[in-house]
Length: 220
Image 1 (cartoon, one colour):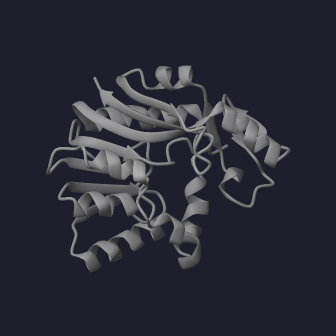
Image 2 (cartoon, rainbow, N blue to C red):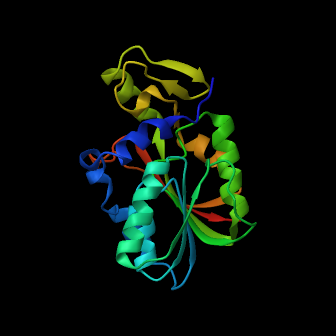
């Protein structure tokens, strides 16, 4: 069974103006961290969607590359970048095979992306993030909490575990009919063994982010 298929759902979202509208404004957490970076950093937006964060980083003066497996999202990003006079290097590729040199980025962000897979693909993706980051470079991203699994099971009965910590909810009309990986804090520390944890926050108090971990890590 293929487990890195969520881009099939999201490609339809990116091609629909009404559905993609909520994903066109940068998340405040990304904005806050971006403001802390020194100028002119090399930044990778991994799983960029329509490019809300890639465009923000480019507008802030950083050198930005953006990848996604959904071509319609990249097309929207290319159009928006051209209209704004911004330079963003876009690549159509899967997250576990990044087409970049070793240690070529100062910062990688991946917002609501890498947990759309089983642990094998997730581990390969994390290894790729580690590979393309320079030592001391930073990573900002999200994962799904184990508590979020219980919440999803309450909303969508009939889910099944297709591999360790990876679930499919076939009755969902959204992206949870594609595999999602849920984890505890100890799992994150194990998966990101090549990183120093700077922030690991269960966003339980935020109704818009309930069920997610927010991570800021440093590559060692």
